[in-house]
Image (cartoon, rainbow, N blue to C red; front, top):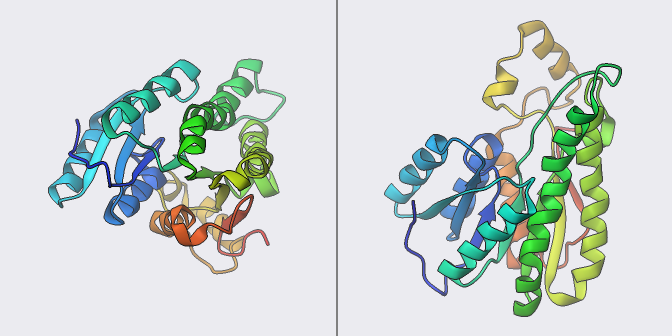
Length: 251
């Protein structure tokens, strides 16, 4: 599915852009005037539904299938976007997976499955857009990390490592590109009211809420607004930063 775009319209790629936080980011950026390419990995139904809904509002949203854990897929998706639109202004590395087990039960495959998508995927996608952004002298890369990368969590050594890794990745790439018109930042969400989080048992939810000083779950739209700000021209002096959106869970 495609949507019309113009050479003057800024283009954003959002990996994992069809569900949860990713869908909120796609929506926020599209309403901010971007042509958004929402990435998905396998089933296209959610991506097609979101794109149809937003295009019906007069916005410009396309979808692209690809596995961010595959450097070849990342190169292909970016090449397709550049061939069609001629530019990529913003990359949001949002795609992520979990395979939760204590380390004693976690296999080597479980470890690599999460690192490949959550951390290597950000490297592959960023590498695919980097030369284009450098040539144009402008770019915004926003990596979606997690409060778990800051605090750790039982049963998530792979997930926590991948999300903490995004901090160092972002800071290092930010230093490499700061004089080239490119900023690289992280947004680290806390517990957000996605379908998965809202489905946890009541007792577990009470425990989660007890750890959040503001006393509620975050909304996906709150993460999306932070991303939208970092993507804006006005955020050009912010790079290598971590924006925590966690209700005070980690300060």
